[in-house]
Length: 229
Image (cartoon, rainbow, N blue to C red; front, side, top):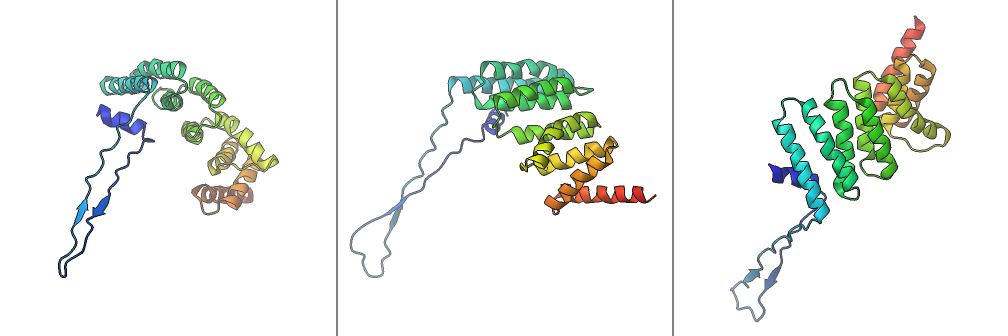
């Protein structure tokens, strides 16, 4: 199980197996098919990890064992926090450092009761400062927004989405459909109907065939019905 876990963590490594075939040369006799000799498949080259990568994998395996043996998720999260923090502090340039930020942010929102949003946001701010171009940024953003909405943390959700929505509106910067919708949803839940309508209309116009565009259209219909009453 440990090997499977470690393999999933570093899924970016891909092995290739090459098959080659060669044919015999010479004059082919009538009615006799030329025999083909197939070379055996080459053995895949074993992945070579650096010392730091091996050490971070060992720590991830320790975290897996903690979750397997803990009585509840919050107890496991409290133990795992220090190990994740060790990775991001001691091995900031390894592939698992960025994932460790994501894991930390996730466990603060998912495994703590109530969610430790302040801690999650502290690590998020540190994450985007250290890795502004991280391929994991969108995934981390989505985790935060979903958790805010799930726990009705509308003020936090609005603060999180507002900078990106302003760039989208004022500077015509491309924005993720989820950000536009969540900005609108937070305003709607907080009673800021004009701001909500503005965002919902943008979502409908830009993403009419996506789920967020369809949900925005439904919200606009709800707002229209309330205004008629």
